[in-house]
Amino acid sequence: MSKIDLQLSAQKHSGGVSYQDSLRASMMEPSMYERIGKEEGFRKLSELFYERVFNDPSPWFLSIFSSSTKAEAIDNQYRFFVQTFGGPD
Image 1 (tube, rainbow, N blue to C red):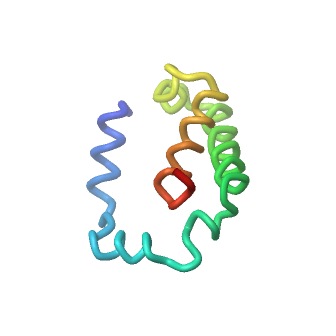
Image 2 (cartoon, rainbow, N blue to C red; image 1 turned 45 degrees about the horizontal axis):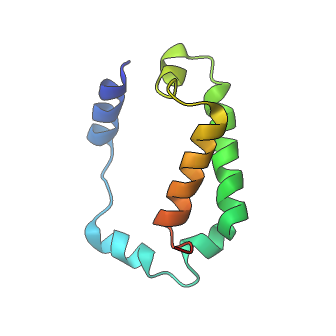
């Protein structure tokens, strides 16, 4: 399955998140950033995710991430999470 096929399949099977739900989530107290454990929590989440990605036996899945090293992928995901979920600027 190609990356595009995977994205199309996810869109087809996902109900998505409404704008209202997204807005409510961004106003949670404590924030998602705090609930997950701030920088340390998002770093661990990113490490756990990419540990599984880079150990996945399916070559097509790993090929999605072939332009990055594992360390780069972890760092990019970590930065995205912190920025998206209310971390410091």
